Length: 111
Length: 115
Picture 1 (cartoon, rainbow over the protein chains, first blue to last red):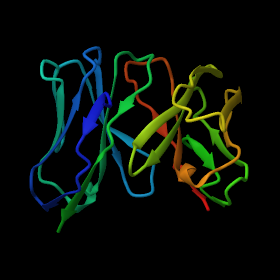
Picture 2: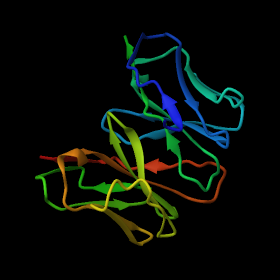
Picture 3: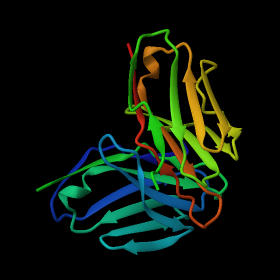
Picture 4: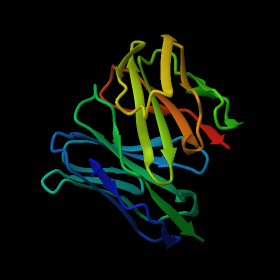
């Protein structure tokens, strides 16, 4: 069993919908949680970063971490076709450690 | 900054041939990571370096894979001999120790096809 689990989708939503993407993990030592966005035939790019538990908001994007449930979420409000991409969660126990990535969820936002 | 540079962007080779992938990290970054991405397995860490020293190579699938970082601005990932199951997109990423974020910056990837 991988340390980080993520539903690969694909997830298809109409423009303007609220999107919820999720990951679960098994290692309670994880403290640093990230969401990367990967467009087709490109490398992943950091989208959101959260340390420990709580919420973080950046424009239309909100990242949530629930360490008690070992569950993280990314919400996208007012989704746009330009949000169509693969979203990968990533996490680590320390800044000195490598990241553990989920498999990624493919999202398609249709006009 | 030019970002992480990888070459070649595409590689098609025949089974049994040697393949060498190249990476130039962002200047000033002291960590370098090699990943492999497939539909089935997602993004897998192969090996990473800190200050040019390999720290963890437990993700290297077998002895056919080797990686080097002779200096702070260059790294190679070699597959010899290559097999069809090595077909994947190989990413190089780099980051710096300083700062709060654990952000890794990815290159555009090398799409490898082994026939």
